[in-house]
Length: 238
Image (cartoon, rainbow, N blue to C red; front, side):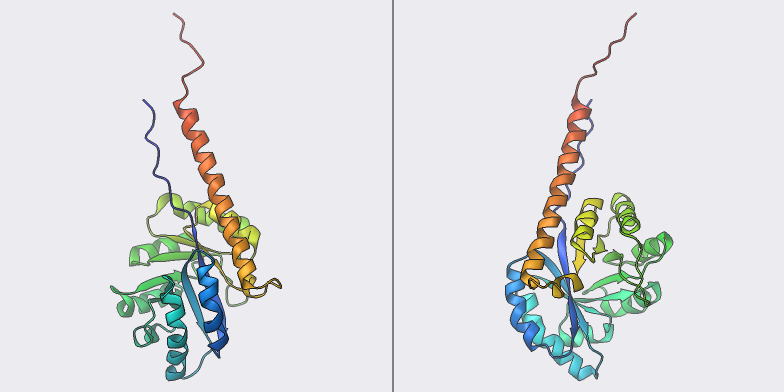
């Protein structure tokens, strides 16, 4: 009897992190075009620290462009500003920050988490109720695991656990490898904004990398399925 094929996973989607926002005007002008031209599930808004009223005003200036495009708006930290600013959720860094954020965000808003140094931390985040776990972002000193280590962690999570996983990509190559490893979302930020060709071209490039990786995984899955259905070439002789 042939094994029942596993349901196909959806194509991974992009998660766009903004530059650190002080004056939101230029970003508000460019976001509609960027979001229309790429498959972006969510935007992580990084805010320049200021007084709460100023930061809320920045969020509200950017929210229509993001949310009207069908993307979720998450704040990088600043959980206390989510409801007042109209954001859809927040990204916490570390288990302690997640624990502190959950009473404010749940059940109506998204609670994501990164800064998960160990597998134990990752599983604890899932058990606490994180809506996604992120692997690969820089630590406080700007250091990151190797691409191979991040891909391994994404593959481990994707194979065993239900909540989505996000791979933090610092290059097109990482975008491809993380989508190939099983990431549900690939976060891109600095690599997009620093691209000399412009953010739109960079997003098109990483979007292509994600699609290529997904096609590769589908091809591999099809090959395995076909092999499992082939009749045995051997024979039993009495």
